[in-house]
Image (cartoon, rainbow, N blue to C red; front, side, top):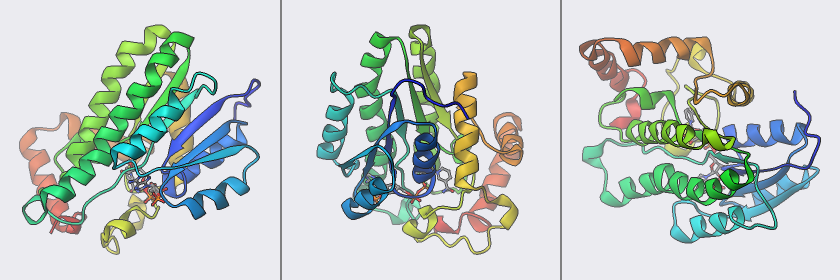
Length: 263
Ligand SMILES: NC(=O)c1ccc[n+]([C@@H]2O[C@H](COP(=O)([O-])OP(=O)(O)OC[C@H]3O[C@@H](n4cnc5c(N)ncnc54)[C@H](OP(=O)(O)O)[C@@H]3O)[C@@H](O)[C@H]2O)c1
């Protein structure tokens, strides 16, 4: 693990649970000062109290005000942020046909708009300083239209494509952007969405700490897209290169087998 010699600051959204909390633990161990973003203020305060150097920034990133507050912190010239982790995200436990426009817009505001807003807030100062990292937490589901009727994979396809695009734009300035694409990871995510994962085989599950360590390693190697774990690397290769007809067949299967959330 690379120890940070000069003070560096990381801002993590969705910092209080799951993959975000694993980022907090890893980066605190590396010596980063942390800015923790989530909605639940009590949980944020409890987490910060256990860390050597952390400030809390309560914000609902599915709202414009929440994005404005975090963007203001990211653009504060007196307190530069070296690493931004756009991690907060959500899924809907329903198919498109059974959803409302409000529900779909809430998903897009958190999974897409907030990622765009915060990246746009952080990047100009990073390119000016000649260093900085952004990790956008996406998903392997973004590589194919899995779970027909779910718009979650489409939102993550945007995050991956967006990250690859910005990464190519800013790397000549010494700034790295990477999409981290985990598969099924044990967190609060599925419970929150009311998704029944009781039949998801245990071999499919990843540990949040392992996902984050693999992601940080790939970021430092200069990768634009990180897919932790060989099983999901293999699955992703298939999703990208197999004939579409085969991908659609597998995708229809995920609705019944691992995508009960869509109906
Ligand atoms: N778990 C998986 O299997 C999996 C797989 C692939 C990708 N991912 C992606 O990984 C990321 C993290 O997911 P996770 O599994 O770690 O989820 P999680 O355990 O449910 O944690 C979600 C975190 O985001 C915060 N959050 C939720 N809504 C928010 C909002 N509107 N504004 C600000 N913060 C919000 C939560 O705190 P508050 O509720 O206090 O706001 C919490 O800290 C997501 O982008 C997800 O799509 C997860």
